[in-house]
Length: 165
Image (cartoon, rainbow, N blue to C red; front, side, top):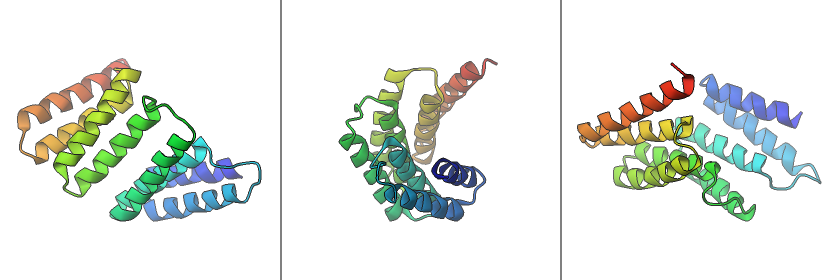
């Protein structure tokens, strides 16, 4: 039941039904709270991430930031190493949130943290490609077209490498 609810929340997010996704993930969080043996887990951390993403896509930036901070706090409590890929995804999400709030300098700084972690894990993966793409988008909005093109090309190269085409 719990896993299915979580998967439903992710599916709804992929389909662009962000409010329904948020409500489903919130319900899933309540199910976790209701079980005695399941305390705060990585799954809970992932749900905070998804709830943050759903809120960000609905334009509820303060709520998104709250869920991302809960995610980070829980990863620290669970002693997830700061070089783990989950921290790379966290910083990528927060950097994108900052971009959406027009905080371009902060976004670049945060996305660089994501890039450093993601590249340390593996240079040829979608997390690195997504971070390159996000950095390129911030560069584009700042008018730094050469850097934007470089990052977009890097993202495309990684995606093609991973896909084997």
